Length: 293
Ligand code: BG6
Image (cartoon, rainbow, N blue to C red; front, top):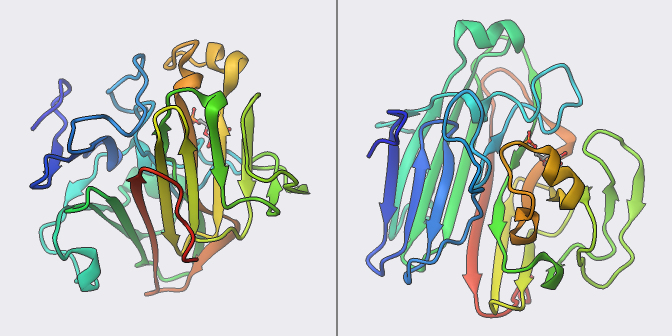
């Protein structure tokens, strides 16, 4: 299908009636629905589906930088580029495709991109929807350059919640965090679980690979499982910052929470020919369960 800007979108469906929609603009997942047709990702009613900016919501991909700590644009360029469908990707382990509906996308730097970030790479992204309705993203980034390079990365996942003040995040208690994407001052989480009553913009460091986001009002829990992504960004702009964002409704902060699988504290370094893989799988279940970890 095509959106109103003529940019292709791919719709994945499972036999149970679940779906996921991926835009070639940014390789961004812009919708994920369960078998009842309920949207599971937040997208802003003021979001703009028009390049060069990423639409506010869904899962934009932050690469080769998260935040704007270096000279590159905020959250890197990958989310603002037009990706292509990769018809012949190198194979992935069977678990990344068995019983799943999936699409493979590819991003390579243009001559223009190389002026800003002079590193040749191939970025392969597989987005899949399982029979169980789970959404999975697998990113493979290969250095096809003659020299090593390093990057930071995040799946900037905008989860849809009924009321942010009723939400809690489990799995990050006792973790160390940076209270800002770029300021490298360490704090330690004290609370039992994270709850929300003001703006939050933190990077939890070396966190467990399973994080649960509990939405009490909807009796819905997002279970995020990640691999290759040690850090977790937790972001909610709250009232004041929401008003300052032109593509975000003044009250929409109540209905979203970003919980990102990320690699930030220790940038990923790739030697020539090396490849890195980062996986995120999100499940929606009736109650919390990271218990087997
Ligand atoms: C979060 C950052 O990940 O993304 C915030 O921690 C930032 O600092 C937010 O404001 C949104 O970024 P952007 O570029 O999509 O407006």
